Length: 149
Image 1 (cartoon, rainbow, N blue to C red):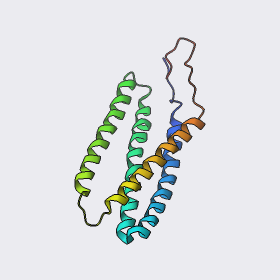
Image 2 (image 1 turned 180 degrees about the vertical axis):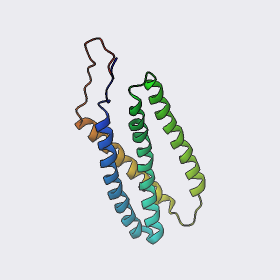
Image 3 (image 1 turned 90 degrees about the vertical axis):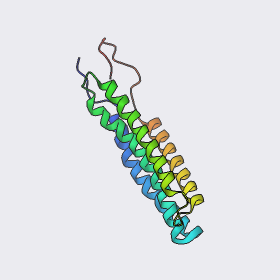
Image 4 (image 1 turned 180 degrees about the horizontal axis):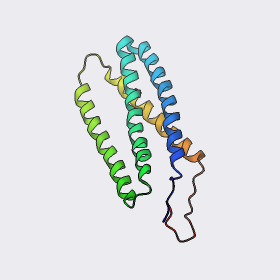
């Protein structure tokens, strides 16, 4: 049973590329807003919050992208779920560590950081929706009796 490259690979690649471009724009805009709100402290808080959102988004996309390289393995589904679940656990751990390290830091504006993180997450979700809805992915499996990928 021959299995090829998953049809989601181009969509994931596009999500990483466009996500990187959007991340640079959001980080720049939130840093500039931060300068207006709280000077250098605000710029750092705005940029760090937006960057954090896109790092977390990138971890998930990369985990799926990398797991798709195992598509020809009989254990593909296992590798896929290990990769995705593992990335979620890593993100949860990183989030807890970041919260513990960043709380009560004098160089961080917590409100601006939170708003910037929220803007980054919303932009990331909107970007994902746009990319997936505009992609042309098959949703019907192979009718020849072979296992679809």
